[in-house]
Image (cartoon, rainbow, N blue to C red):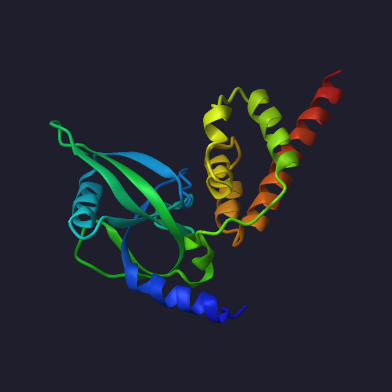
Length: 219
């Protein structure tokens, strides 16, 4: 679908702020979303180099989930900014990444560095930088989520959670929900917040249905 005039203007300004080629940290089992925070303990030399280079050039770096074949990665990842950086005496670096926007990988860039760089495009995810919040009824999703989390022994401070805006709530639940990496990737690739809410509700509903079916079978 082509961008509207307002989206096109927003995207052009957006592109001025974010590089088309970025260093990317591929990590299995970690799905990272815009407007969330991801603490990382960096100790491998290639990623120490990546973080130091990114930190010295504006702090932007990408996260993407690696597939079973470690050299292969998913096509959609998330751009983050290093919002906290601490060097530890033993050589490790502790950072916090604040999610900005998702990106689509176009191709890998050949380099002489220890880490990987990719040419990326942000066009599909211009919605990630909008400040306006859409109104979506999430009461059914939230009630099912609380049941699902409780059954899986996952504790969440719901009082603090309610202080988040809707986008942060949905992205946070998508990150921490006890579901498969493939399901989390599907949530990451959901373009709009509406589609992400529906996908998350479908996934959680399936698990609750399966759990109820298993309980009936055991009885």
